[in-house]
Image (cartoon, rainbow, N blue to C red; front, top):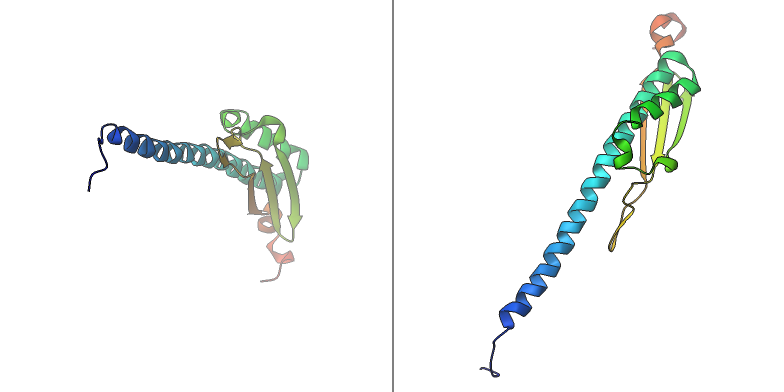
Length: 134
């Protein structure tokens, strides 16, 4: 059954497909930027935990994070939003780095905060194994 002239129906279908395609494309772009930022934050957390495991110096661990993120990371994460927590849990050094992604909102997609945690065994444990059980 035909309702009359169907000229322009292809254009309407194309517009609907175009909208869905670009929504997918922007979502993919947002997740990619967020994932790259997460990679940088994870690397910074690992470097902070490693530095703290060797030196037990929180300032040196924080400096390591600043050095690690100072290269290309600020293209993907907001510079003023980085917070670092370094502590000792038993024979482990634990570092947690939090940051906001540079692109926090991409049209109707909202990117969550980047939170990464890393642990490293303290070097003291390897130098003095007799002080630890097991």
